[in-house]
Structure formats: C-alpha cells, structure tokens
Amino acid sequence: MKRIEDGLLLAAAAGALDPGRAQDLADRLAVRPTDAARLQRLQAALEPSKSSSHGWRLPPSGRWGSVVQRPLQAAPVLHMDGSHGLRPGARVRLSLPSTDGIEDPGLLVLWRGTGSWQCMIPQPGSAPIAVERIPAGTDGIRVIEVVMQPDAARQHWAVVMVPGALDVDWTDVEAVPTAVLEAVAQRRATLDVVAFAVTQG
Image (tube, rainbow, N blue to C red; front, side):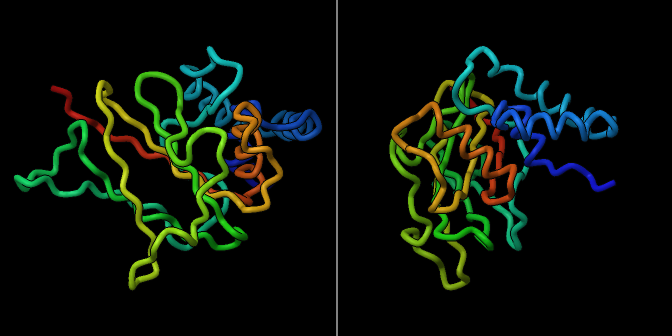
C-alpha cells in the first residue's frame, strides 16, 4: 500500500482536516500501524502548542506539501567581524523554494520562539505577499532575509507558499492556519520549517 503523505498527517495532527477526510484517514491508519506511529510522533511534536485551540500548529522542522525541484535553503549573513554565530539581530538569508505547480504563489513567513507561532510576513489579517513581487537573482532564485529575535535561544522559522486562489478570508486569523494546512495536505502548498540556535547576551 502507498505510504500516507506527510502533509496529510501534518494536517491531521494540527486538526485541520474536515470530518470526512479525518474519518477516511482514520480508516487508512487502522491497517497501517507504521503510518499511525508517524502521526503519533507528529502529534507529540506539536504538543507544546496544544494549549491553544486556534492558531498555527507546526512541526519543529521539516519540509511538507507540494514536491518542488529546489528546496528552501538557509544561510546566515556574515557579521562585520567575519563570524557566523547567530545572535539577536543577526540576519539569515532564505533562498525560497521553487513554486512548481503553485499558481500565483503567495508567501507567508512565521516565527516561533518560546511561545506560539506568529505570522511575521505579512501582518496577521493581511493576504500573503505575491512571490512575483520578490526580485529574483540572475539564477532565478528569490531570496528574503529574516532577523533573529531576542529572548529565545531556540528559534523556528516557517516559510509557506500558498496558491493565490486559496479559499480563505485572510482577515479571519483563526481560519487561516486551517486553510493553509489543508492546502499543504493536498499538496497545493509548500511548508518548510527550519530551526536556529541563537546566542543570547
């Protein structure tokens, strides 16, 4: 039998599946103990954010959703003194993944320190940034930079590429995570989560 897709398990772990799809997945998991164990591991990874019934629930790291030719890449920007260590205020260059098969892709960037996930780009309640607005280099790769935040030694950043026609009211901040994770489960969107160690003080 075919392995159950990571994105579908992620959406299930985050509670983003509608009842019909959730029941269908439960039926498949009943005869697939290996995939059921994968779902349990994902649910355990999401446990710290279960205190909130709403909001983003993402895994600590990994790539999910649509298959792309070029994955996300992260590289710290060199400090003035030539060092590479990350401190609050340090910048990390994110080379965005390719958007093969995602029509009119939009970009969301989320951050998590010691608390819940926060949407950094765009402001909560706003539609994603059109990827075409981000300049591409001569190699065709689009790059953004994120800034390490203070007061969190372990920081996670998530880059999400969603189709422009995603059926969601972006001003409804509680509905957005569910719609986005469902698109990831359907492989209509991509989700990359990366973690960084940031030296404090």
